[in-house]
Image (cartoon, rainbow, N blue to C red):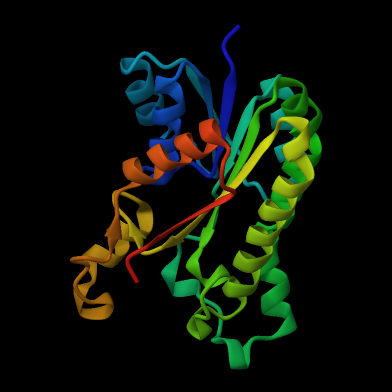
Length: 233
């Protein structure tokens, strides 16, 4: 029976790169995103590459649906957690104006990660698998303009690093990908690229998701570091 990797928050950028990279190593892949609109294309691409895959439309903030989907998937060896907001017009106020309500809203991307771990951890421990998280550079570098998002990024990073410390002696790997820059082919990349008058020239400020996915795979296999920072900022 092939191992299974679940990609939560799959999109055309890093999510699909992670799916392809683990699929290349013989993993069956389960894709999860808020909408099923692009699932047929994703699945066709993976099948063409020889990867067994299926997809579910789930908003990770819907706890009941998220947990029931993970139950339906069955035994899970690896989870990649990378969902997040993609609407650049819905950014929170900068940090000196951040309200507790905005902080609470930003943390809605942290709580599902905790729910996921609670559900899959016994099986991941049994299979000596792993958990990978993706977050923003504001977790390690002060970026006041990101406001409450910086708080949730830091919380997710700390959660991943603390899990790594707690689970290392159980044969489970936990790692975090800390990302500063626009990921090529992703939804945000498309928006930013289409509005140079607002966001400026992207030259030198993008990251190749295939490169990040390759590092993520090496982190999982080598298990010698809990974090990698990818920054072009």
